[in-house]
Length: 73
Image (cartoon, rainbow, N blue to C red; front, side):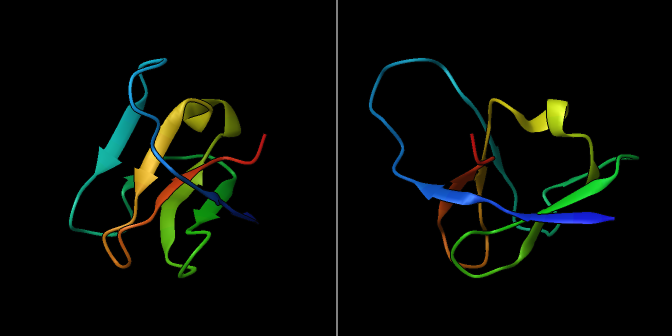
């Protein structure tokens, strides 16, 4: 399975609506894909076995460190 580091971002005020995954349990998302995504700050696995197209417009709020993360563009 491929593993990718997410990019830590500042959440913009206004602008395009974004889907924010925010839970207390890890991983935030688990599917049947081929890639895991790790927090760009603390390296926690935030998404497990997902397809890249599923997370293109998703922001992950890491419950371990509080960082907002997105997929590298």
